[in-house]
Amino acid sequence: MTAQQTTAQAPADVPLWAPAAESLADEDLAAGFAGGDEACLAAAYHRWGSLVHTLARRSLGDASEAEDVTQIVFLAAWRGRDGFVPERGTLSAWLVGITRRKIADALSARTRRAELVAAAGAAMSVRAPREADRPEAVLDRVLVGAELARLPDPQRRVLSLAFYDDLTQTQVAEVTGWPLGTVKSHARRGLHRLGRCLLADGVQSDFR
Image (cartoon, rainbow, N blue to C red):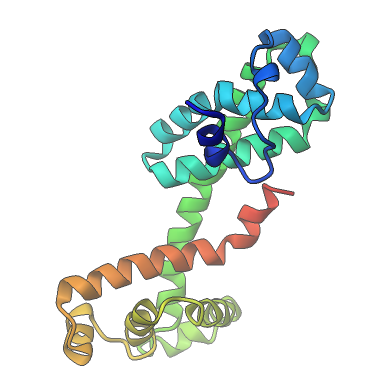
C-alpha cells in the first residue's frame, strides 16, 4: 500500500504517514506517540487501524459505522495521549480498550437513535393530541422539524407526509406518484439520517 493510499483512509486530523516512524519497534512507536510525535500517530494508525476497524465491524455489523468508530478511536487516543503510560501496557492494548468503549457508545447511540425517531414520530402524529402536549413531545417536534428541513427533498417530503399528514407509506406513494419501493427507501434513509442528525451533539463530543 502506498503512502498516498494510507493517508486517504486516515482521519482528517492524522498527519501524513511517515515511513521512518513506520519502521520503529512497537515500544519506540508508543513512546513517540505518548510524546506527541505526529509521525508516530500516523504510523500507529497505519499499524493498528485495521485491528480497530475489524473489532468495530464485528460488533456493529456496519462498515460505515466501523469507519466512524475507527476515526473516533484514533482521534480520542491522540487527544487523550497524556493518559497513555507505556510502562503500564502496550499502545495496541490501550487502543483496543478505547475501541471497546467507543463501540459501546455507538451501540447506545444506535438504540437511542431508534427510540428518539420513534418517539418523535409518535409525538408528531395528529392522532395523539394529548401525547403531543407533553413537554418532551414538544421538544421532539421542534428538533425533528428543524432537522427535517436539512434532509434532501425526497426524504423530507416522504417523512413530512408521514409525520405531519399521518399518511401510511402506501398513501404517500399515491400522493407523490412514486413507486412504493422508492417511498420506503426514502423513508428508511431519511429516518437514519434524521436520527444521526439528532444525535450529532453526542457524536461530536467524542472528537473534543
